[in-house]
Image (cartoon, rainbow, N blue to C red; front, top):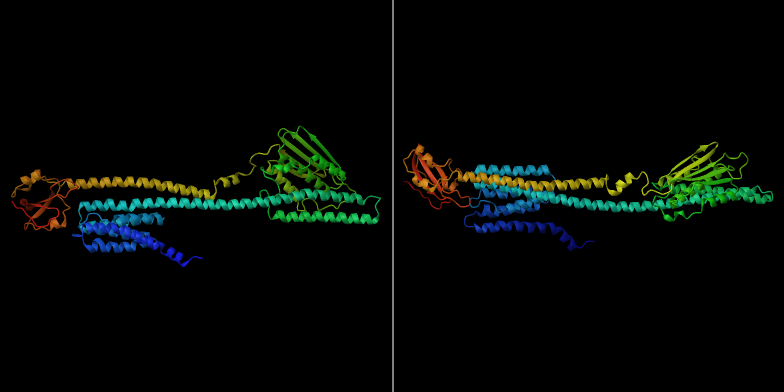
Length: 558
């Protein structure tokens, strides 16, 4: 249970961070205002921007786009403030745009927002008739503060998504590992159940066979025969109960290895079973006619192959005892090349009375037919094949086994893809996140290059605008009032200065004249005086030297 103090700390965390961010962004505005406090408006330069930022910063958590628009409005206030060229709140716009890139994944909406902000700024410039420096600020600095931080925020968002995707993938792998472990436990339980079915069922069948043989002995009394009959029936019932129990266990846990078999990487101790010769000898002692022959030289058999061959013979003998009592059984084991062939065939059952009750036919629903199904799966897992079918009135089981088990069993392509992550849903999502991250990184590199070219173009255009309207001081001194325009044309620049500050334009001019303005210097960094030439018709009437920021009205008429 969380303490009240922890709840308070958790609830006020975002508010404290927003307050700290607002204080940092407002500090730049306060510092800039102190530098120009004598000529700046306190409402436009301080009160209104800080109030708007106080709303925009916390609002960026739920409405990051609206917060960016408000920050752009704060920067646009600098266009209406004649005491400054660039807004000190440009950093606030950049920070909120970065947060937009981190908190919002809507690319189209962000680009529309940037277009709207730029359109509003350009319309305000046209409405106020600002100078070229303000136009340069509007078409270069504000778009840079909008686009570049947003790209950085998107890259950060992609990185965070990639990290989150990696942790989700790791969590999924952990869950899959637990699932695989659980499946391994279930497969082991099923394997044990299959071994019980194969081994114990075989032994019980032999016991029932011996009891049936003793029941026919002439030296026994009637009571002994009755007891043996009861014993034989009890053993037969036990075999049925065992089959039913194994069926319940295996029905709930069959899987790729659910037949009770081993995979190609099974327990190496699985070969610790008796030789096939001993198995056949015990069957003979129980009264079963069995003929065993080996052909060829046995190579170095894998323990799993040796155990599988034993299981093929054991299951075949058990089926012959159950389904064909009294039949002769032939076992052939042939070693040839790198493979071993195990063939077990029994003849038709004898026509005489059977000492052992004959179970339901093979394949009938009552018997479940579990033995051959598990045996076929066991053989398949080590890369072999098994065929079982009636033959010449009897039944034949043929298994072809490799002497050595391959490192991978056939049919594991999908499992391999799932293990490596290739083709899985998590792998595809991770690859998509990586592609998105690389694409955003490329955009984050290309966008600054494009904006750099834009800035260079804007600076070149601004320089052309400010240098093409320069009237050299010597040429200005050579001008005389009363001269015609055609006489003055060789001394005048190609164009006049169109971005004259309003304060300069407001200075009084001779009545009835039309004035043209020129810059006195081509320097882009220094403030240059303005030359004013006033014409009455086509004749020069007056010429004046006006400071770019006049404190008093001055005029000069020659």
